Amino acid sequence: MAGIRITDRVWIDEAEITLSFIRSAGPGGQNVNKVETAVQLRWAMTASPSIDDRVKANLKALAGRRLSKDGILVLTAHRHRTQERNRADALERLAALVREAAKPPAPVRRPTRPTRGSNERRLTAKTVRSALKGTRRMDRPDPDA
Image (tube, rainbow, N blue to C red):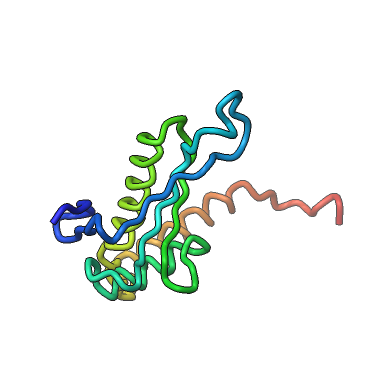
């Protein structure tokens, strides 16, 4: 099975991916209306046996508008001037997207309370700072009052 390696445990079979070449948008000179250099990558993500349900759920959130209602992920690459480089760019972007979705979830934060010592140090520092500012105060009445 020829596949695209995403992580050590996640592989996508190349047979699941469809690549089509389309004309790239924007200025291009003589070849703009003749050469199809842009690549459109299509992958039926929801039907893919290569990834588990957790990764599919994460991918659905990450893909956004690139995911069709039928569960097909569509990536278009037209950054480069050749088909080969755009093809490699589309496959790398797919791998990066799936790699991001395959990351393990962040650990749940356990709420903690400050220790008694840290609380006492904080209050002592406040007292010292207050005393320092109190020495700057003058005992005469305020001229603006």
